[in-house]
Amino acid sequence: TGELDVTERLGYGLIADGPDEVAAAVREQLRAGASQIKLAAGGGISTIYDPIDTVQYFEAELRAAVQAAADWGTYVAVHAYTPVAIRRSVEAGVRSIEHAHLIDEPTMKLIAERGVFLSPQAYVFSGAFASGAPAPAGAPPPPPPTATQLAQGERSRRASTGLGRRMKLAKKHGVKVAFGTDVFGGSRVFEWESREFGARLAWFTPLEILRQATSINGELLALSGARNPYAGAKLGVIEPGAWADLLVVDGNPLEDIRVLEDPQRTLRVIVKDGKVVKHTLE
Image (tube, rainbow, N blue to C red; front, top):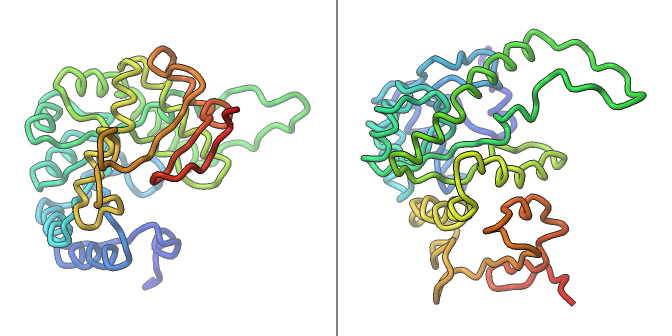
């Protein structure tokens, strides 16, 4: 129709086809202030026109994005679930894979060999939003699911089947696992982000999870180079000269990582950029 897609109108991203369009879209996002670039290299769950098994960029298009980002001193991450979408992206030079639920072992080994980061999510794919839960007493019954919701549910179930296998393969091959949640949108969902800590206990120790959320994430974000808002110092480490982002926790997350799932209660002191922004200690 010549009209902008809804995601473009909302400022979530751009639709681009062909290496030239992709390069132009990357440059436009960087000029607008982006610190990294994320591409949809394959199908997904939320959108009705993107079957999860599809591959949606040629290697030449991916390379155009990687080069355009590198020219600005930063990197490209990709949304991808399947081995072919992941492998093509890695070969093109992307630095982070988001999701990767349906990955196979040879592709995970390639990620490890290339030093590519894996940004998986556990909580949102662990059945937390499965349908069939009883409605609260007195609440009206929910409306029947739409065809779109049914299709999204089936895609989510398919992705969830690979949740544990992906985590085990990443740990087996020593892949750098970042801490991501895929939780975004309205303020009512922000509290779900912290539930990712406990959701990873099936595969990682509390110490491993803390490293994912701090030092590994800091290492990944530092790949944005000159675009990095924290370029003046290291992030995610405790050492002289690093950014002073610190928490004082009521509890020991090395013994029970779930204390971080209730930040209003357990985060007693928050220091951000060296400034105390919360202090509830007596």
